[in-house]
Length: 616
Image (cartoon, rainbow, N blue to C red):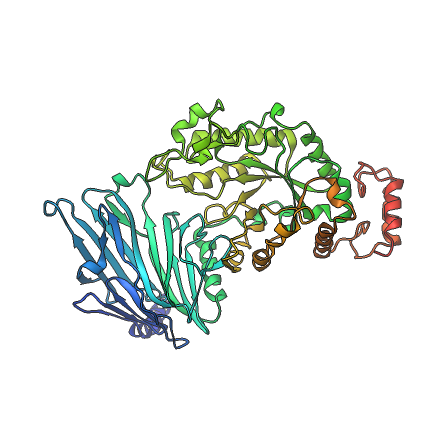
């Protein structure tokens, strides 16, 4: 009985809490189809299905001071735009929801009917403004559906988005998710606060963000694209978009979104990865296999905090004759390189292509039916596929939704790992997610197949660490490392992507040139890499890069040592090389550790190394 009365009191208290919140929310509309919504955080107005006014009540800032409208429409046949029609408008199941219905038909009446439903509401618990769409076409062929946010002022807000490493958007363009647009979040940052727009999608449905500027005004269009083939798509229902005002800087909504990502997408916690992956703070990108770099590098940086990314460890380059990783395809010196690297304490990541098969490979015939096709043209896609007859590096892209393909790929990498005991695999072409016109394969989308491939690799090879090319919602779930490309100099970098993904995935440099061999080119990488806090990445061609006159690379190595708190010969890690280190080495003579010079045994040479480093 006591529990019963406690429950009653709790219910009454809850009502008193929720009722004032509900009273502060209003949603109204008129015969012209204008919708007005207000909470204790914001006031908004929709015209012709487009969000045209947004006022932040927390900061008294109005972000819509321009005169350029966005679009709310659906493309199916000739398309349907809301500016052409006065909608039928209905109240939803609660006082805080409404539905706008736009109809169009042509040719024989009602035969090619197209309908667009726009749902607008307020989440009573969070105060989020909710936007959702549903489209219908009797003849199918729906290619996209979108809603717009217009009249925005460049002088009032910056548009921050996780695009290509993180940017403040300044140029008119269209960004596709989950490729350039890495996760569906946009933050409009004003002077004292702002507004965020995010999708609550957990199925990795294709989307686009369109930014278009005219004068000092700009618009944002938010698209969703159905899974191909489009001809079969008669209805489309979008995930819910959520908007809300906030006070403070961009980290306020970014942190909330990161917490949502963790809860909804469930990325692998870094604590579940091998411990060494969390200790890495230097990437050595090594195209060739030069064992002579290892003893030199061992003296210059801490091997235990250094990962060597080996690019071309096979004959024919890093992408030739895929997916052949048999012993005769591997350079004979690769095995000894990995063994030597491990003896010093380095970790090694081998570069492999995740979805590529060359047309001449015997496997291609078996997997041709899973060759990714363009969603509009149906043409096969791949790396230099159009000139495959003259380019030896060309290869087809195979959809990883195929269980046959995943089984083949996982088995090959497992055999490779058993033979060479590499610590990690870099999965090239891991981040592109294609809208394959082949449709579902084995009941899976491309994104679902991509995630399964990562999961199956980690299950088949216990303790393996995965890296990838670029990053997005699909790949950060299982990848400990991700290469990030630089952006054009006309773009403005921002740390939003690093903020969102860094608790799970370490970002490092992609395509960095050697700092001494191509110094002018190398300097171009610094502006965005510094903003993004990219892990220090150094390209090493061969042992000659450590010659004394290679000034720039030695500056980077010195920076690495500072970050690693590394002193060569400091055996007990107390920050200085002294008699205690000498005693430790002397007592270990004839044993395997601490082997400072990597010759496999503690001997007089290790004593000399410590003696020469005294005082460092």
